[in-house]
Length: 285
Ligand code: NAP
Image 1 (cartoon, rainbow, N blue to C red):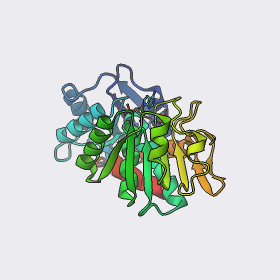
Image 2: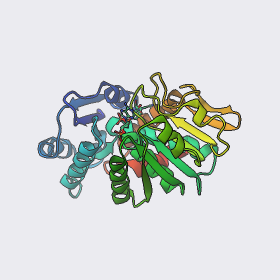
Image 3: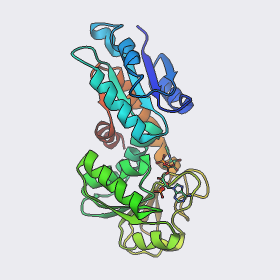
Image 4: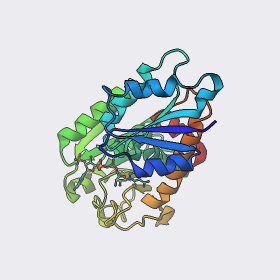
């Protein structure tokens, strides 16, 4: 029986990246649907859950993607609510690669050093990747601060994190190099999660800072989020500070994404969101 992965994308065009990784993760066929939303997903879910019975059902799975985390989360919730009794299939949420990227980055940091009690700053932590990274760092016992170009947005993201994950995170303004340098002054861990091609931290803000021990940056396109590290760094030692660049993190992210897709086909009851994906990232790191 063929393994079918249905990619429900909240964007106008289904993601090529998620399609390729769907195949590489073990699907025999990946079908992408665009503009999927809570009000039009019902019939798509019916098609997935009413077509195969018993053990055969585990050969059908759903992946929720797209560029908007809020839309992805709402869609994911609607899909889970639509399931009943045995009429369900495994489902994964990874809007913008948020869960897999954040989980890979934090799992590598946690492997390098215990994060418990450490002060962590997620630069530009209001996006899909930054918010998930902040949640994982907080769940590891770190004291987490997120920055944004506007304090209101940082605080709004902190509230959303508390609601979703039950973690307390502080939101501060970080619109300039000076503000971001001040934000990381006492930090032990810096996780740069800014938009692609945006530098957030000058080298002068971390190279001689005696507190900073771990650096992670998920932006692969120059200029990198953290000046002075390399995208390929995977635990590279810069005078006692270990750095993880976007490609260093991206290797584990891809393996993790593929592994999650593979697991979708192991039962019809799998639910892969932040918690499940981070747990797997820690096993794989
Ligand atoms: P995003 O939503 O595009 O951006 C994250 C945050 O960056 C935004 O919330 C915004 O925060 C801030 N920002 C945007 N433009 C800015 C600017 N010009 N100056 C300063 N801050 C700016 O990012 P994402 O989807 O969460 O992804 C985060 C990063 O991960 C991206 O660089 C992406 O390319 C990368 N990524 C890497 C992988 C991998 O495998 N390595 C996979 C997926 C994504 P405020 O508006 O609150 O300031």
